[in-house]
Structure formats: structure tokens, C-alpha cells
Length: 76
Image (cartoon, rainbow, N blue to C red; front, side, top):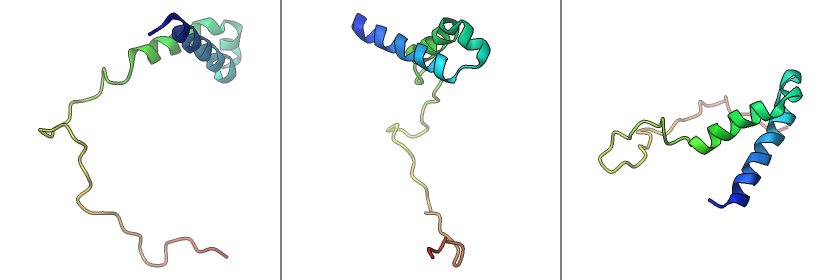
């Protein structure tokens, strides 16, 4: 990953910290932005459980869900 990409990610984390942080977070947004950055860079694969299928493909539902008659919304 290039240095420019890291800077862009850090700036985006800072923007989120300012935009969505509490009033206390906005006083020192870099602390929350650092937490966001660490979380983003760590990734989600780290804690994702391994699939139980031999080929690691997603499992599909055995039976499609159906909607009971009369429970679907009607447009007026």
C-alpha cells in the first residue's frame, strides 16, 4: 500500500471521527481517528470463523422463505 493511500485512509478516519463522534470526541478527534484507522487496517478476516464446508464456499438456504398470503404490502 502506498503512502498516499495510507494518508487518504487516515484522513477519512479523521473525517468520520469528527462527523460521527460525540462532543467529547470532537475535542480530540485524532484519538478516535486512530482507533478507526487501527480497526480498518486490521481487517475483518482476522476474527472470521473458518467455513465448515470442505470447499470453503458459502452455504445456501435449504428452503427459500415464503411470505404468507395477505401479509405482503399492497400499494394503494
